[in-house]
Structures are given as C-alpha cells and as structure tokens.
Amino acid sequence: MRLIIRTIVVLAILWIGVLLSGYGMLIGSNENAAGLASSVNI
Image 1 (tube, rainbow, N blue to C red):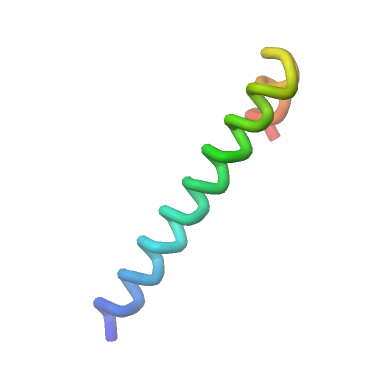
Image 2 (image 1 turned 60 degrees about the vertical axis):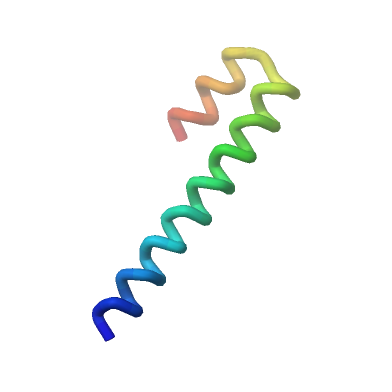
C-alpha cells in the first residue's frame, strides 16, 4: 500500500514538473525576461 502511494506521489511530482517546464517554455518564447521573472515569483 505504501509503495502505491509513493508511486502516485512521484508521478504527480513528475507531472507537475512537466507542466511547469512546458509553461516556462511557452512564457519564455512569448514574453520577455521581465514577464518570465514575474511568473516565477508567483
């Protein structure tokens, strides 16, 4: 049971990481460095 929970947590963290990196790439290509910095601070 503990292994299943740990696997779900790891998958969730990886999924969030992929989403954040994807948004970071989109923001970096569409906005300037100031826009990127303000989005990171949120």
